[in-house]
Image (cartoon, rainbow, N blue to C red; front, side):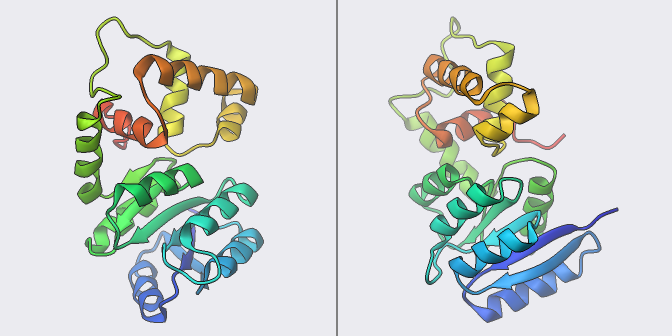
Length: 218
């Protein structure tokens, strides 16, 4: 079975060494490259097309947000897992919008990182449980959205399928290719569904997916 290829992007060498030790002990994981700044992370991702980039937020030259956006533009099949100390929803919103598919806190146990990497490699979105509670709580408190849409609000099977894929971290272009639809059609279905449900952005979609159980692995 092919190993999950991983690029580590963090400006602290001791952090990268620690991560390599953790990941190197797993038979299904393979650290193929490292980067000490965001620009190097983009360059190496473009050269190697790894399955996963484990990305820090605070890095020189390009920060994690900028590097994530650049990688997703040039390497859409590569999935970005943010590994950071920041649990702030503002960071999470920006990184999800940039194309990140996972978010794990550095203060979490190593098992959380391993679980996240494997989830992303299987096509899922993964949020650290320490962040999930805050995300769902924010959804429930939002005045513009509700945790459970009114009974009369329904979305079509196609709209739900597309929302699920958005929540799992796929771009409109990737969804269009997967479902054999045009990007315009995907955008239309997504827009109709989010308008019906009162969802304003990708973080709202992820929150909704969490509450519906769409982000649990099969």
